Length: 275
Image (cartoon, rainbow, N blue to C red; front, top):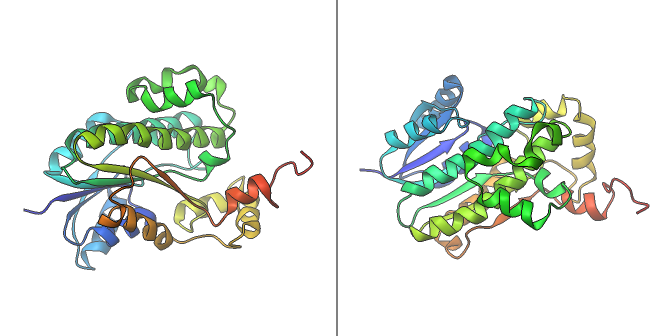
C-alpha cells in the first residue's frame, strides 16, 4: 500500500509541490471548499497522480484529525492552506493561518512516518514585521495551539489590521516549525517552512486588486528580481527540502521573494530611507 501525502490547501503552490514529490504517493487534497479540493485532485489525477479530495477546515482540530485518519501511513505533508489579508477579517486570519497551521503541525507530527518530511508555506510578510521580544517568540513557538489566541499580544485589541494579523500568523508559522522540528526529530522526521514573496496565484491576484494592490505591485517592480515569482519556483526549493538532498535540513525557513525583503530593509522599498 502507498504512503500518503497530505496536501492542505487546494491552490497553485501546494499543487506545484505535490506534483514534484508525490508521484509514488496517495495524495489527499484537503480544502475547506470541497469543490476546490475536487478541482485540484482532478487536474492531478488527469496527469497520472493518485488523488483523493477531502473537505477540511484547518481551524478545527477534529476536521484535521478526520483527514489524518483517512490517510493511513503518512510520509509527506504539504501545508499550503491559508487566507490573505484581503480575504478575511483579523479573527479568521489568526484562527486559520496561525492556529490552523499550529494544529496541523501538532497532529501530523504525532503520526508522521519515520523518514517522513513536511513543508509549510509561510510568507515574506513575517520577515517584514519588526522583531518581537525573545519571550514573545518563545510563546509563539511553544504555547499549545489551542491556547495561542489567549496570548496578550495576539488579542484582537493588540492587532492593528488584517495585514498585521497576517504578519503575526506567518511569524508564528516559522517559530512553530522550529519547535515542531524537535518533536518531529524524535520520530526521525523533518519539517521546514518556505516564505514566498509575491507569487502569481489566485490569492495574489486578490491582493493585487485589493486595498494594498499598489503596494504589492510596487514591491515586485522594485525588488532585485523585478518581477513576481511562480508556484514552480517555490516547488523547486520544496523539492530539495523534501528529498534526500535536504536530509540535514529541518526547523528552517527559506525566504523566496526575489529580494523584496532585502529591498524593504536596505533598498528602494525601505519605508523611511532617511532613518
